Length: 292
Image (tube, rainbow, N blue to C red):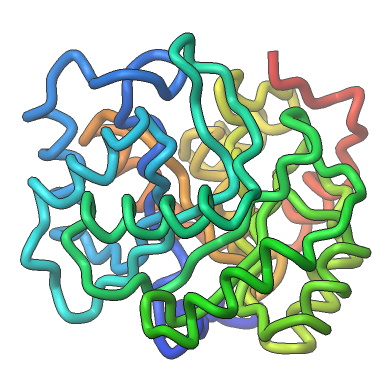
């Protein structure tokens, strides 16, 4: 079997393909602070100690909570650490997710990320397409992407990505500005982006699946559990390994608030799935996988 490509290019950086998503470090519903900020910082420190050099975050996680935890735990940052953030959304007082697409909101969000992370420039900023909270929906991203391109020209943003986007929006975005990554929902149960992933791989563009393990309701499947038992691995490790072997441009960012779970997730980088196992997982019908 062909060896798994361990790294991929993300903007100007070469990153390990198994990274860390910081969303779960905030309070319940990604709102408010965690019960134990010291434990949250310990997870971030353990991620770095175990070779993670790509962290995904956003200042609307909390809001502000995860970025402030990242700064408290890791600043000054290792030279090889790439922090990727998102803008385009905001939270109201009850924690609802709302679009934030105006120029003032986008500029303010970039400055909030810079301040809370303690950075002079953001390596990669993903524009979150908030035409629908529950998934991609068509709509023009020209105005917000133009604002991001202006911020790049000012040196506040180095590279631009897009999140929660349809294939048409991805193509349109590439006509407006260079795109270094696409961040959409994708996992064993949700494979709508199969064609898009292959197109991006051919173009050298990273694809970063959010909810790689199912999100707030983890993946559940008899087939996945049986495969994991055969390999003496956890179902989540198998799900991560499947993503890593699905395409070399996939960067996986599983999130957790537990150091033990973090180490279990990172162990998936060494789990090579046999071809027969991959075929078995690929043939799982969507009805055979649930996230509830």
